[in-house]
Image (tube, rainbow, N blue to C red; front, top):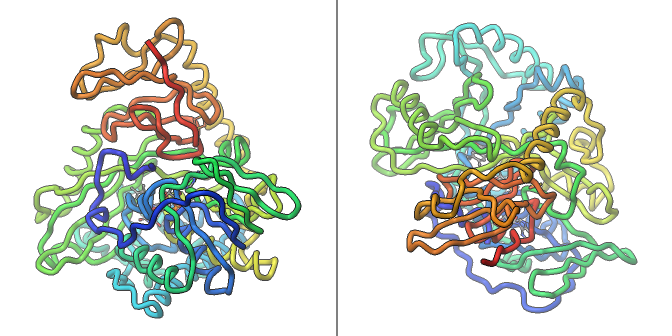
Length: 507
Ligand SMILES: Cc1cc2nc3c(=O)[nH]c(=O)nc-3n(C[C@H](O)[C@H](O)[C@H](O)COP(=O)(O)OP(=O)(O)OC[C@H]3O[C@@H](n4cnc5c(N)ncnc54)[C@H](O)[C@@H]3O)c2cc1C
Ligand code: FES
């Protein structure tokens, strides 16, 4: 079970994945175990198999139904937190490494599509960074200089942006990309099969121990997978309690999609300067008409309860700019992790010798997932990667002083919430289909009432580090505001770092 069980359905989920293998029964020995079958895990598995390794992939849910199924699938190598910010924080070399790795990721996707004959609507298109307000044009100038210094030589200033932004300036980034993410993953799965890799869905890993140069991964059904190396590509690392989770913050982000006449919206990636939660727009081509995909309205996970208003604002914003947008056919949300120094954590896992990790996706987890696969392949095969420094999971966070402290003060507040009052005074106040926090016998309880009126009661303490979870009305799940775990209404884990269910409350 995973985030695929959250209530909303993305446009991509209409594509049925061509895979229905059984879960792992019993034990397994393999050279490399990859945990997670999203873009990061399947890309790692692909690179390692192509490099001659024996690989097995496990996922606690169905293959390809994690956050990759909830993306908007821009393939951009302009940094979405901006090169100007990364340069001032970590310097020119970090920008250069980031730019090179992201370019390489899009090149690699294009190459794999060609070599493996994956038909996933991949296309190279322009990206446009547009001002949300007139005054932001000044920032565009700074970002253009920083992007060029990072290596983006053909990024350019244009006096007239795309479509609705035609009367003002924009930055144009050539050679960006788009694709259908699940058609792409399907292609990778087919290729992994042909090359002899093993895939096991519905196989959660609940512990990792290193001993005698082997890693032992315990499965949720009591089995053990023994591997010389393990890659944790679970979006949020479940095997670490503190390192990394205190350096990145979870944000919910929202997407709507609807039909639009061919040519009525530019086939480009567009994103604006709004902070926090910039808007992001792209088109998915169809045979008779296109689908326009618009995202934004981000908030820290568990800290908003106005999802309907957010989706309505997103739609109003889109209709102002795309008058020909038809009725909205899809509304969905997902979660991204924002590292406090803007760059994901990819490389050897803190606390382990033979375990590697990919996390900290920000809004660019597709390209950082593919870049991460190349980086980890090089670390395993050669012991070095030209991008190891910028993504080093063990790096000191220079931005710690303000951002790091702010995020962790928030976490302390959510942990202390267990001592406060509930959101409702009694279970009778919870209507069918709703969840709320209620204090029962002195304990903070996460209570959900099914449409049939039955109650599901769990402890409200997240099984990662004990913060109090919050009901997400839109996705019908419990979200942990501290480090981004999600749980089903009955407490089963959907998204890490937590991997244990909320404990049941009996009455
Ligand atoms: C709304 C939205 C829009 C986005 N837009 C973009 C965009 O335009 N461009 C871009 O580049 N990025 C974008 N992103 C980010 C990007 O989509 C994600 O970062 C990326 O898909 C994450 O891939 P992943 O492989 O790390 O994680 P996932 O796809 O979540 O895969 C991780 C897998 O690990 C499994 N797993 C977890 N724990 C365990 C365990 N203990 N045992 C076994 N399996 C486990 C899960 O079941 C899951 O299938 C967006 C994200 C969202 C939510
Ligand atoms: S995710 Fe860390 S306490 Fe919940």
